[in-house]
Length: 387
Image (cartoon, rainbow, N blue to C red; front, side):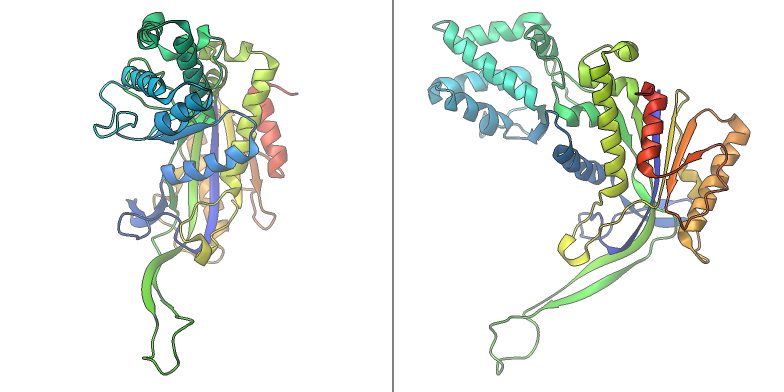
């Protein structure tokens, strides 16, 4: 079962996502170059919003996780720092073979996502090992070798099986090459957003005035610079593998997702509702202070069903040349493309559409429409059943 989320969002002059040269990210698509926003950028801002709105364990993505989180908490619990460092070092070496920083053995070579439940378990494991015998390092190593060395199995045997990688891992996955760390496949798949029309940017030249500069000193600005700004109407696309999300949230087998307790399904329902809200309302953006790049989606199309997901990006393979209202043009082109796909493959999804009142959405066929909150509720009912 999948949830597909399509959005159309217009941004005024802004720099939503920069490349390594400080320019707006772009991509050639169809017959024109487009401005784009990377999926990494989008997910970062959505994660931050979900942290604020969901009462679920989060995660920490850092090279210094073991040094700043695990070691700190172990020492604060009363274990002497020398023993604590040996145990944390043993744990890190076992978890990420070859992934340690050569200059600092308690740091990783690159950032890795760990969930708060994992942090809690690591601290508990180290403290218990330190209490059980004269050689706590050996005790810890033996503990890590049990259950075939699988961390998730270890945590489950200790009664910690929910959200081991945090809400971030449950939604967006965690890729690791370690034998013991539990990999978490992404339940949410995010496409790069791109403009439905050709790239339109300009270089903004700016200056800075020195407030303490004497009037008789040399005229001119104390600093001058420039940045690339662009305005655009973006198509966004997100897919959620609902059974995998429930599995990641609860630890169940994905085939058993519908049989989970109502409380678990309610958590998944709430997570999805909050995710849709974040996708529709949370804006990415560099240069926040000088561009205020805050916008909300003017059109949100939700689709639920078991058929293979498919993007509607090809509706804009031929870049739109604005004539009149670009948003209405974009909506019309989207509906025409969707109707053409239905004519070829048949309609396989339930659809729920929310759009600002100034848009004409009558070209969409067999779709329920209304305020976003109502459409989200209907989409959740189609996935999990009515409350």
